Length: 357
Image 1 (cartoon, rainbow, N blue to C red):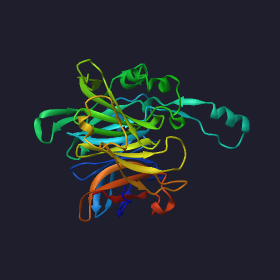
Image 2: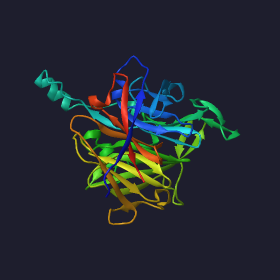
Image 3: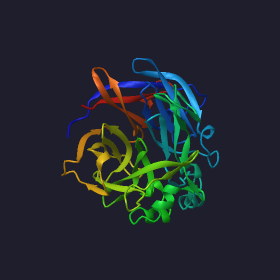
Image 4: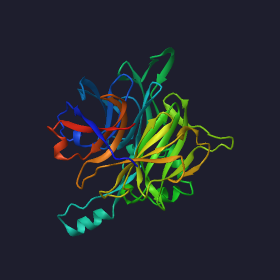
């Protein structure tokens, strides 16, 4: 394992009255047209930033997700992954439940809060939105093939949840955690990584982690009717998903990012604790033929490097590849709950650029 090497930092400036946005970012993507797209775990929008100077992004524009795909209500989506593929910007919610936090004012009320688990329906979403000439649109022509029409769509919903949860509820590994409603930060079901290639979708699970093994779920999606995606069978037996178990030293998946046909995996603690943050490389992930188990003593799973971590903030949550200095590609790392030294002002935040090759 090599040591991490910080190449530079990248400044992102947001033009919104709410100063909390820059401190609550949870996902990022860099598209071929040069824009950065970021999502928050507290909003129902996707934010676009334009390059304004070397390693500076601004000219902020907000796109409200409800303008493109239907939402259950006005509550947060908890966006935990964004990726771009073949004309579409994809995103996923966490699909998780959450336990209420004690407020420290009244003992009995706090005990009740700790026993209360809630569900935000908007978290149960996987969707794609066409990206045309730098803007998100509900429908439009593909930039490289004007005869191809791109349409916004989200995964089919069933009884206040989507098809993914419906299918995984019966899974022998994941199902018990969904059925019992275990909250995300208690090692419950929690999506925190997304990587898309064409119609193939890889989801990284922060939890559950099973006996130290983290899980990737691989899907293939197709549009069953305008605006609605469904799961396409991925083998002759009609199976709707694959599971890839990876040994991340007991850590869960916090984000995914493509490096050619390999997956870069950002790993971190499953529960609410500051701890090791490590980057792995799952080689040839696009060609895993069936369910798989990848250990570190195989050639398939490689440790890249550890990221520095601090107690109380700077939680690494987003990954993207961007050019930096003389490097054709560097690894951009976005942080949730950034420490004060990352916030030059209330509407700005620094991300890190690490050497990858």
